[in-house]
Image 1: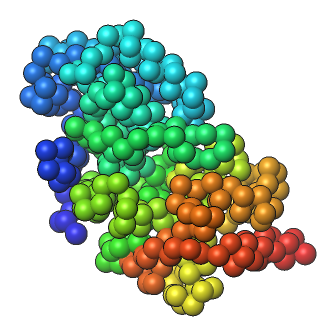
Image 2: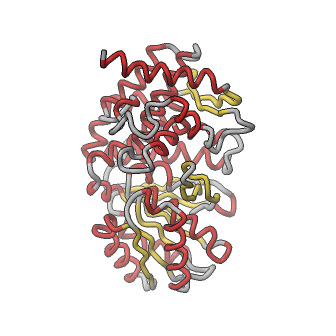
Length: 386
């Protein structure tokens, strides 16, 4: 773990990928350095900023001003906010706009936004002219600690989350913690689920620190930079060792097999933000681990208690419209999980816990125990109503 940072001290976290290594620059106000950093990285470059309507209101002009001050020409592509843009239609819109802007192979696409914009712009860059480099400027907590780092890009299929995409690493990540001040409390909480994930899966000391300091992270104190830097270091280390998720990197999917199925069941809508799905998924993964005898009930309860303390949902029943669209149907949820990218020959892969701070990859999990577990979670609801 790093020493807590002061607001005035930007920190660089390196992602070690040989000739494709890049820096994550973390700090309050670092967006203003975007132009100078891009100019130093790629002299004479042209850029196109991809963002969404909400982010554009706050941060598009400052980003453009920073680029202009460095003499870098840029154009803009603005999409609708949310998962509705992470579709075939959204990819077409962004790709055609980048072609119209005459972005060439030696130019840069800049993803200015949360996870949706980063995934969408990154995938468009990956396929534009068979590959154009891009810069991530994440504007949500979730994107700063997770989706902007590691090169996963893609869009959703109606059949599942992130089923179309490519590994395409950014050349730079600018994580300005000041931009998080404009997030709604719900958006910030959703991003915090990914911060907690790093403690749960691989760093019990960090998880203990989060239990004591999460309130300061939410207030915007120096704990915020510390949490983001620690999370980025954890992910950067994993990515540098397993870029294409052939082994260790799968651990970063803790909570995602359950969570992605819940997102699909809610139609990738604002009924359930990604981080909220991860929070419920982490809780279910911890409880399933306890059911299998891998951890104690107290450890599973500890994970859930912290997520509740952070204001996150932890139960299926916490989802708006729980009884609708297959959420109350174990078979329907199992069908959605069967579309998970980690499924092999019909067998599910889960990330489970041996302890708080120690996750493991459980391959070839038989569907029946999972279905029985989900049925139990659904009966919990019935018991509450009785």
